[in-house]
Structures are given as structure tokens and as C-alpha cells.
Length: 346
Image (cartoon, rainbow, N blue to C red; front, side, top):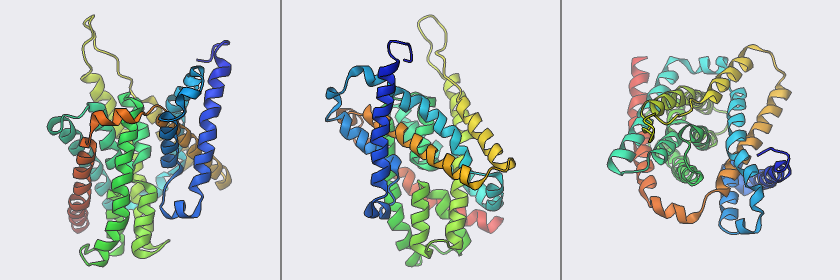
């Protein structure tokens, strides 16, 4: 990929992805796009898919390794630096109630989605895991983090992200309506824990809580803190998934199990959280790191989109939507009763 004869073409591929990503970042700043809470990651994968299904034959094939590098290697780097968005102090502010709700919702949703997807809907395992990760943890970022572990094809990640966009957007509008109708009988803090524990994307959590109590409210602060706890839980989830895949790997023709990589980048993600927690780093530097990280995540998502062809969506049909819909129903209804139960006990 970076040999002397291929280096220039690889860099051209990386720059090509970066140009699309800059466009995604710019589009995300348009006022009506901001109002829809569409992150540059989502816009990036859409631009990548448009390219893949229209212009891909007009770009030199030699640029392909650069696109692959962006989708695989840059993705791991971006997930590692995602740790700078979180501190242990923030996690402690969630309290035992928020932590328990987060753990229960991540574990039950992932297991439910994976089991139903594979056993009842006969989904491809990789796609089932990716879809379950998107709903249970933190939306598109969770899909991105899970992709290197399951080593699924790019289009599967795109399908999983599309379910996050669909049901996360529904949640943004549905939760405020149900709350104002008196169906959600909770105080502000508990409602915030419920939102943070059940809504897909961080941006969608912010929008949902703002739609109920306005920006900067106690509910919103509680929701975001709980949501970040769910983000941290991607680490033990992926480590567990990596061990599971290693244990259940298929036997190859020489009688040996196929190797499945344990996600070392997840360990570094945890290390970055510790660094951010115990080393005094100026806010300006943290802000810069987070901005660069968002761009790297956008590049990874864009590159995944560039490997996604519409015809491959047809092989999966509507099954991922059904499975994601079941998980959404669990998050909405099961999450409500779990949050209420944990709140009553603790």
C-alpha cells in the first residue's frame, strides 16, 4: 500500500476521501441540516454511497488502497482519540442509577438484536452484530467501532448506519410527543437518564432532550452524561465480541481455527479516557483533538460509503429494518420500565 511504487496513488486516494469529507463537514454546517441534527459522519457516508454508485468508474483503481486505508486504519485511529471526549469525572456524575441503566440497555439490546437477527430473521452474523451495535451503544460511531472487529463488508456498515438514522430520527420526534402527552411519568433527571440510555446518536440525544425541556436543561445534561456512559461501554462490548468471535471462528481446511483479531484499538480508547481524566490538558487542545477526530471519523464513514453499492442492499432486503425496529421498540418500552425500576430501587 505504501511501497515506493504505490505510495503516490495511495496518498491520492486518501486526499480524495478527505475532499469528500471536507464537503460533508461544510454541508453539516448549513442551517437546515443543523436543525435536522445530521452529523458530518452521516452526510459523509451518503456522499460516499452517491460516489460509489455514480462516478466510481471514472476514478483510477490505483487510488483504491488509499480509500481502504481511510476506511480501516484511520477508523481505528479515530476511535482511539474518541476517548478524549470523555473523562472519568463525567462518568461519575452519572451516578449508580445512570450506570446501571446504561449497562442493562446496552447488554439487553445488543443480545436481543443479535439473537433475533441471526436466529429468527436468518441475517448474516456480521450485519446482525453491526445493526445491534448501532442501536445498543452509540449509533454510527458504534457501527464504525464494531466494523473492524467483525471485519464485515462496507455495505453492511452502511445498512446498519441507515437503521440508526431512521429510528434515531423517529425517537427525536416521538419522545417529546409522548412526554408532553403525559405517557412518560418521570421527573427531569430520570427522563434524562431514560433518553440517554435509549436514544441512538449523541446528537439525537441532545435534540430529543432539547425538544422536551429546552437546551442546557437538567434533563439534557443528565441525558448526555448517560449517553457518554453508553459510549464507554463500547469497549467491554467489543472486547467480549472479539473473544466470542475468536472462540467460535470457523475451522479452516488445515484444521486450524481462523484467526480473529482482538480489538487492541479499544484498549487504547480506554487509555485515552484515562489520559484525558488525569493529565491536565488545556481545553483548546482537547477541542482541537475532538475536531480532528470528527474529521477522521467522517473520512472513515465516507470511505465506507465509497465501498457500498446499492445492488448489495437488495441482498439484505428489509430484514435489518425489521430487526432494528424490534430493538427500537425494546429501547422505547423496555427502556422505560428498566429506567423506572432502577430509579425506584436506587
